[in-house]
Length: 150
Image (cartoon, rainbow, N blue to C red; front, top):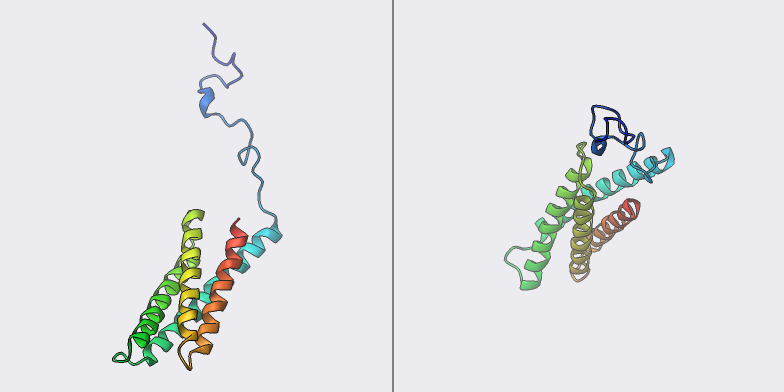
């Protein structure tokens, strides 16, 4: 029978729960200050773009006649949905709690997709060019932040 500590593990402790290397797991490095700065800057830019898009979409949706054609109804519905998705994405990006990176990635991809769909709908609606551009800017900001997460 082996005596405690003979296997290289500290005596009195199970060798399964002793870290082999101090600090981060082997092969994982801490981000540089430049990488951290870029991450925070892209995260803030994305949250800000989401806020601007939510505002623009809500305003544009409120200007569409609710008793209008089917095309008007689609534009109004997409504007409301884009405003809600962008607002929710902004809240997720502004939270200070630890979040699962995969959840953030899914949220950003969803936001980008909805923004692009909304922009296409606004393109077909006269007077909505500015809102369409804001949606595309938000989609670009989401794409940029997604690249930072990879």
